[in-house]
Length: 375
Image (cartoon, rainbow, N blue to C red):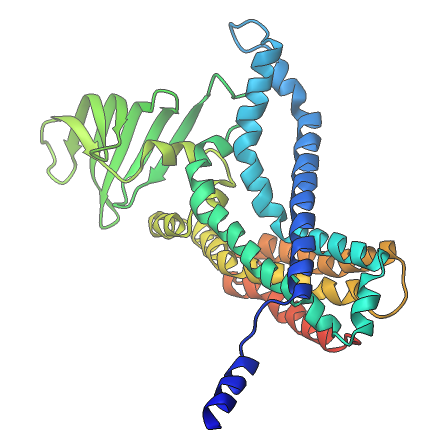
């Protein structure tokens, strides 16, 4: 008699997805795919509308590109960019997907039937919250694994699809404190008129000059043409011929530095390496803020969702358009506050505080909104 009771008690505490969970989850995922395609398509179309002339104009010493060439430029540019747009709008896509799914259920009076059966509205939105948490992990994977692989393409401008321009490097420090200068050509993976100030304990230890340096990815060093080294620690010493110079400043890293937003395409591990190399205090704080927001961005996306859900499934009679507008308005306040904190991080606000302010302010509001949901 005791054993069956134990089994029955264990079964009562085992949660299994029910029909309502699978139905709501399926509706949400269909809406998510639609919302993602709509948002990304609109973002690409708006950018293409403004920058289309950059794809069709003739390059230097070249004829105007044909139709197929232009299409190739557009696909090559916006293919990697779509992963960046997905990261930027991942939170918005989840909210729109929840709004579309619940609005469709409301319009078909399905939520009314659910309430009449005695199921709580909080129970209805549970699959959406769980699936949104898992979908947020896609944003994290996109940020840490996919974007770093496309970083060299993401920093391109619209008019650099075939002929890449050179980048002027000026006193860029490596991990050992040496300062690099020269003109870097990303297509040839080389830097001309290379000049390196070798430092030791904050003082100049020597100078390296070379007509040209080519990056060797396997050996992690620069192959020098007509390289010369002058030792400043021994005054009067002769110039020594130098054929290679080891450094952690890779060719790809030099290319990324041309864009002020290049740090947003780096993984968390690369941000830590860059922070060790940073010299200016402003750059150190900027990187510190970027690192903190890597942890808080997924949480902020969930807070935005929890702010909007109570407005979408309220028992009060309101139009679908009004419910969606109020949900987007509530989530939009959190989005604007987050954007403002990112601008102020490292300047007016400490990086750690700036990253957590949106959560500190809006997370309690989302809890109050969910607690006040009439079921």
